[in-house]
Length: 179
Image 1 (cartoon, helix red, strand yellow):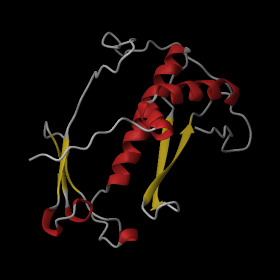
Image 2: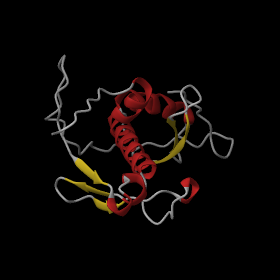
Image 3: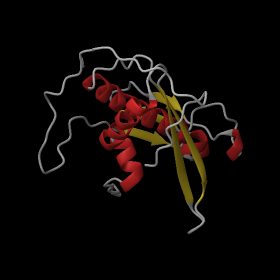
């Protein structure tokens, strides 16, 4: 990913750090040569009254914790009265990047409490094939830390975050038609 490390005010914020223990379990981490899933989830989307998942669908996770209506945003001709895939993806990538940055901040003895990550996901036409593409912008807000200190931590978080890895190099995907 490309980085644009600038201060919203135009000046570098003051450096600040605090020693914080990670508080995250890494006992299930795997440092091997092959992909080893640590967590797997399944979400099923059905089409609803319009028989169209984006327009009137329902998304439900296998454990039932996620259970929501999907609706087209007003900008795509829908009523905008429900969430849409782009909002869900924005939440996922922002949360994952926030988690990765919080981890590397703690490892570098910085308090991640003030960090926020804003994800903007744009949906549009692919000029190459007329299909669709997503464009993602992440904005990290980390008050009271010197940009020169934060920049390498943001870069390290980018190399750890599976969502930004997916956005940069793709992700293995299989599509199977069930009988």
